[in-house]
Amino acid sequence: MVFAALLAATTSFAAENRIKPLAASPHQIESRLKSVQSLINTSSAALGQRTEVDAKTRAHLDEAVRFHHDAKDAFDSEDYEEAAKLLMESEKSLFKSVRRAGAGGRGMSEKRRRDYFNYRLKSARALLATHSLVAKEKKIIEEKKELEKQIEADIKKAIAILKEGDADKAISVLDAASGALKTSIRTMHKGDTKARLLDFETPADEYDFVKRFDDDYIKLADKFITEVAENRPDFPKLGRMKKSRNAGVRFREEAEAHARAGRYAEAIKTMDNSIKELKKVLRLLGFPIP
Image (tube, rainbow, N blue to C red; front, side, top):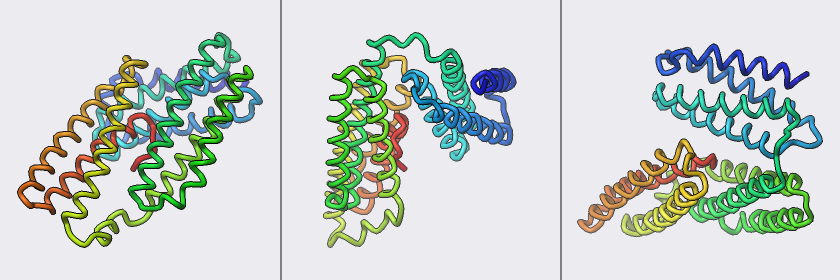
């Protein structure tokens, strides 16, 4: 009954908001953001009461959450057209999740469950790499070693569970590990990020430090873009990922030109802009990078 009501609500909501979505006013978009968030919360609570949840059902809900998060980011940046587009994608994914849950999650073959496990495994490993990078950037590597060891153990545990034939349980273990990493990343990003300036004797030293992180972010961005292009060529955000990556590389080239001329203050500022663009690639994949 819960999912029947949710299905009716999401169908009605989507129909009401499909008319001229890109012409919506900021006030209308803000209202839709709140309404979709409410539906997502209700769906999450309903799924949480189930002892078993079909992996694809969960995947659609996760996708709805990611699209909604991106829509809010676009709204906060006053890109209302993009926010409206992303909200529509969130609504579509939410509808798919609720519809599948109402049908009992039928149709998920064992092969598809394993394929989805592999997708979540790649995501968990990517999050772990991102977590290590942020810990290095914040100079708190030692503090985070224990968590990263635990996550590595959880990943091995999930793989072992999959080999025993329980794909859904294995996916749950991976999702819990990913959740812990996301929480830790958010925690690390709290506080004064400008304190980095106090840790270097010269601007040249700081430039070298920032440049190393830009190297890491470029490698991560290229890795993720390649994986998405190969495995999910129809991913709706792939174009934006490439655009952000290319913008990051352009800023990098400008920063290097400033550094060669001895303009380290400008080089550092421009390199930071490069990192900001490259971080967008991770955010587009749902990683909690501010």
